[in-house]
Length: 117
Ligand SMILES: C=C(O[C@@H]1C=C(C(=O)O)C=C[C@H]1O)C(=O)O
Image 1 (cartoon, helix red, strand yellow):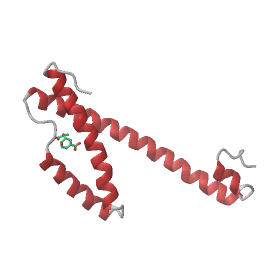
Image 2: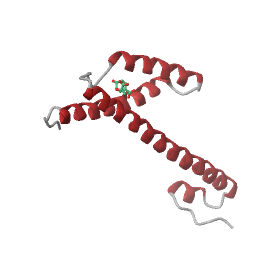
Image 3: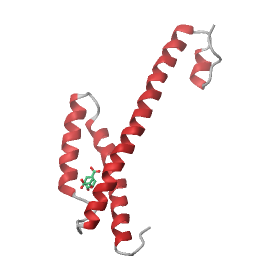
């Protein structure tokens, strides 16, 4: 007996129990990986928050383009080794870094007694 289908793809597979079981197993792993990604990102943002406070306390600029370039090179190499598209890895890292720098600007502005955004 198979559980009731819960999504469009599951309904389309209908009575194909083998394919349905495989889809559900894969989606279970995707759920676990997405949870791990959220936890990893939360830990990364905890670290970058502290970096932002350190920078504000020592009057350092919110962004460090040289460090960003090193990180992007490194992530592109890691992605290629892992057979992940390096262009995607770069886009993903830039998306995260933009958010980090936005936080760092806000921390610096708070420290200066100004408001940003
Ligand atoms: C976290 C930092 O601040 C910024 C964010 C970075 C990142 O998220 O990897 C890298 C460089 C900086 O522009 C840092 O300087 O280390």
